Every structure is written in structure tokens, then in C-alpha cells.
Image (cartoon, rainbow, N blue to C red):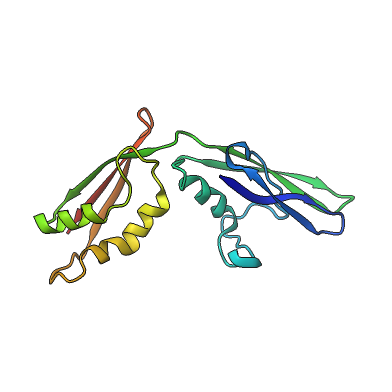
Length: 170
């Protein structure tokens, strides 16, 4: 997997983009200080959270405990700030168990059939989130009942690098 990032910045401010292999990505150039709420202001990712995109790229590959820290380096002569981002991946999690409670037999059958991450597969947090956002609703399509509240919890076990998904339907 490759990560598209700024690889150089020209003196007149033009940025050059390139691709870096994800396991080798340990730094990046960011032209503004880290801000949890900063958004990308151009291109196809306009409006998306800038720093969150890096974190999301890792959680899609099972690195749920990824930590991202950035340190600024100021170049007053060039009127530029570059940031070195240190990424600590932590364990790469695989899918453990899908634990369901509060469902009828038919409801449990439908949820298990709709669940997309096989036991032992790399846990992709975006697939989990998509399941919460749409998959559950689609699994119950056509049934005369619905659930008002769904409790959810990811039980991580760093020793075995597995994550169990717990869903409680109420």
C-alpha cells in the first residue's frame, strides 16, 4: 500500500507530491501547525480532516492504536514550516469474535450474514463503521421491527492482536 504525500516544497511554495510505501512512511511535510480540526482545502479530499486522513489510512490496515505526533521545524529565511510526523503503529489487529446480544434468531442470522470481516482477517475499522452506518439497517430491511438503541464496543487484545466486536441490540 502506498501513501500519497508531499515529498518536497519549492521555494515559491509549490508542493511536489509523491508516493511512499505505507510501512516506510515515517515523516511528512505539513505547511501548517497540527490542528485536530484542520481540513484539506483543495482537491478531491476538500473538506476532509487533514490529520485524520493519516490515522484513517492506518486503521483501515488494522493499526487501531496508531499514534501520530508532529514536531515543527521553522525556516525563517524561507518563511516555511515543515513538520516531521512520527507514527507509532502499535499491533496490527485481526478480527476476533462477533458477539451479539438482544437479537431474535432471525435477527442474529441476518447480522452475521451481513458482517464483512472474517475471523482472522485484518480488522478494517472503515468496514466496521460502514456496517454501523448502513449495514445493520440493510440487514433488517423488510422486517417489521427495529432496534431503538445499539450498544457497541471494540474489545482489543494487544497480546493476541485481535479485536472482538460486541453489539447489543435494544
